[in-house]
Length: 187
Image 1 (cartoon, rainbow, N blue to C red):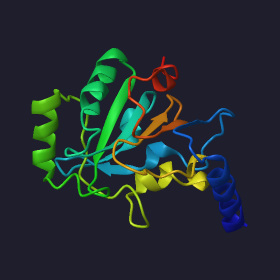
Image 2: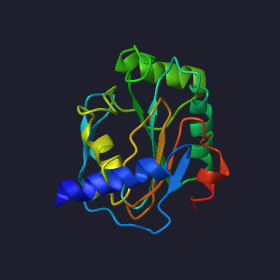
Image 3: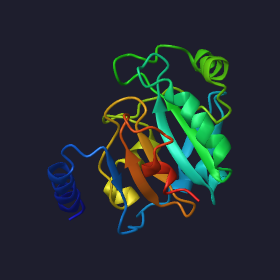
Image 4: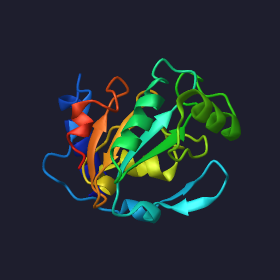
C-alpha cells in the first residue's frame, strides 16, 4: 500500500511538475515524519539534531563553490541577516557537475572569505540519488514530508521549512533566495 501511494504521488507530481520552478504546499499538508528528529553533521564533524532549529523557519540549500549559481551565497547571507527567525542551512555537495571538489574546511573558508557567509555550513555529502543523506531523503519523500517528491536537480536547489516543521516550498536553482516566491512565505 505504501509503495502504491508513493508511485501515485510521484507520477502525479511528474506530470504536473513539467516546467515548474517553484512548488508550494498550498494545502498545508503535514509531514508523516518529523524533520526535527533528523541528525546532520556539521563541517566540524559534529552530529546535531535538527531539533536545535525547532520554532524557526529553515531554508535548506545544496551548495557548490564552482557553480554559476554560487553568487547566491551572498543572497543567502542577505536573507539570513534580513529575517531573524530564519536559519539558512547550507549542505555542500559534489553531486552535480563535480562543482564542489573542496574539503569541508576549504568550503567553509571559501564561503566566508568570498561571500561573508555566517550561516551554518554542513559536511559535503550526497543530496540526490539512492545514497543521499537522511535530510534530503526526508525533503524528497512524500511519505516523510507529506507531499514533495522533488530532489535537487542541480546546485542551489532550495527547500523552505516553516516554523512548525512543515515543508512549505521547493524552489529550483534559478530562483534567487531573495525572490518574493520565497520571501513572501517568510514572517
